[in-house]
Amino acid sequence: MEVQPPTHRFNSRTLIAVCMVVLIAVCLWPRRSDDLLNVPLGVEQAAIVTYSGPAVAVKPFKWGVAVNVRIAKVTEQAGVRIYDVRYIANRAGTFDLKDYLTSEDGTPLVGLPSFKFKGD
Image 1 (tube, rainbow, N blue to C red):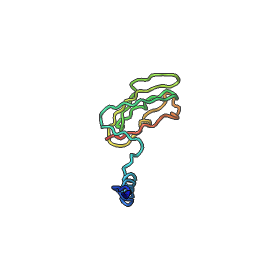
Image 2: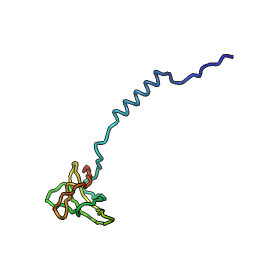
Image 3: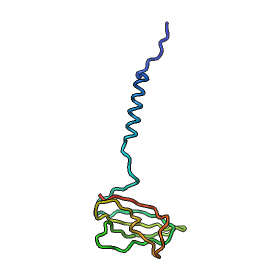
Image 4: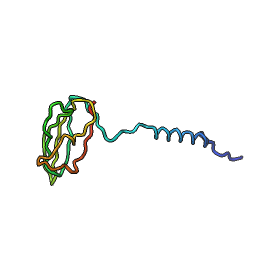
């Protein structure tokens, strides 16, 4: 009896074509720009911010602002403060919660993490 070589369902051309299709699909897959959170307009959202710099406060309210912000609770632990920040997006657009915060003593908030979101 003669031994037959194993037959494969895919030949090399088919395998290359499948790999090319997968490669093109991966390259064209839509990418997310940054880490942007979509939030509904007019609904309060919460963000937990951990910061070891000076005490954080909300910038003074201005009539017609795009985002209303308040600090609901502050917890202190081993050299850091944990802020429970609440915010409401009033209009569509891309915003950074960091833009609505300041320090209580007026010093810059160096190292405060960015928190970008999109009012939708």
